[in-house]
Length: 156
Length: 49
Length: 249
Image (cartoon, rainbow over all chains, first blue to last red; front, side, top):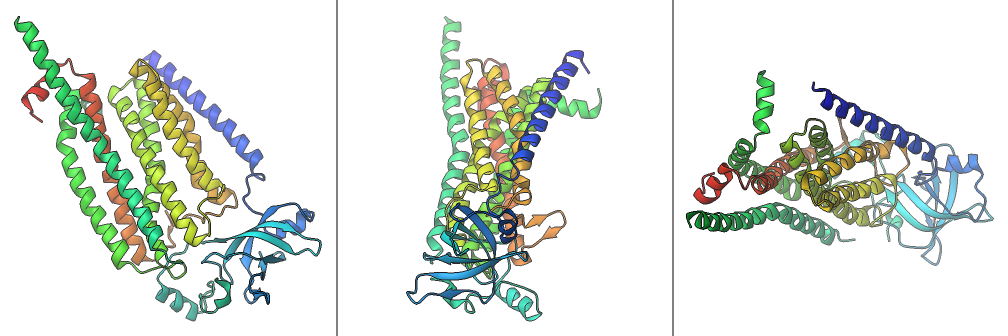
């Protein structure tokens, strides 16, 4: 190769490796801060004080969804297998909110250690299939989020 | 919730953006060709004189 | 000269590339439209709704191919830019700069369709999670490359500065791809990988067909933009004059 081109190639490679390394270090140090949500297990481990806002993510424990008498406040338990947190929310739940389904709630713990949510978002997983296939899988005993009918009170 | 407006909105946006993105170079080519043709004609005339 | 080197040089020759692109573009459009119509007809009318999301899953057939293209085009743009910087191949420089607006279009569609898909499924149009944020950064990178390119009075200097920016911005690509693995995000992990897919075949096939159509769209659009630049820059050449006045393709 022409020595001038060789120099350009070398210069570019040095710049690219430098930028790559710098960003890798930045991302590594930001790892914790870039978490969009924390799981119930994290909450237990990190001892987040009441009143400090954060996002809580996990699965809605099957059978835990209850509606208060006013018909607005919903209570459910979010779990990640390592911890459970009770959540209270009085707003409109997304369509995909089901028992067994992933959710992300924004809010803070209150003094009674109940998570008071101001917003609840449904988290989707990477599985896509027709309803018949999902039913067939469920019959064979594969764990799947419950169908909308069985979580009837979950949707507004 | 009815999902139709979201689906229609998504596909209308896609159609608009992709059509515009595809038509832009065609229009530019047409304009460039017209300008160049005029330019070549003019320079041919000055050369003849 | 070796065969590979000869092809490389031929590809860099403006009149040859101009004529070859002119011949290829209609075929690329034909395949793109045929595949796109087939895939979207399948996806929108034949494919089943999702067991959880219902009909809103149909946005996937536009959103996912656009997202794949948004970072594939960036990768190609950076490769073209690299060739332009190291070997000063003019054709690579033009193709790098012609890729930026097409990539920006795919990124914009990814963001808008994702937002319209997020509202009925997640319950929100937008969140600042790692995946969505890095995709937005990708749009700004494309706009930055386009802006830097046009900011210089001398087009070749602008193209080289923009190519350098595109190389630096390359770090964003693994961040987009692995954001759903490295961090907790609202966005779900990828469904299609080298080791298979978690999308049912009845939905996967139309998705792959639309994704293939998108590649042909990029090819046709890229060559069409490349031709404009080639003609602009070679206006004083005899072949350019012959094409404009004679109308020979």
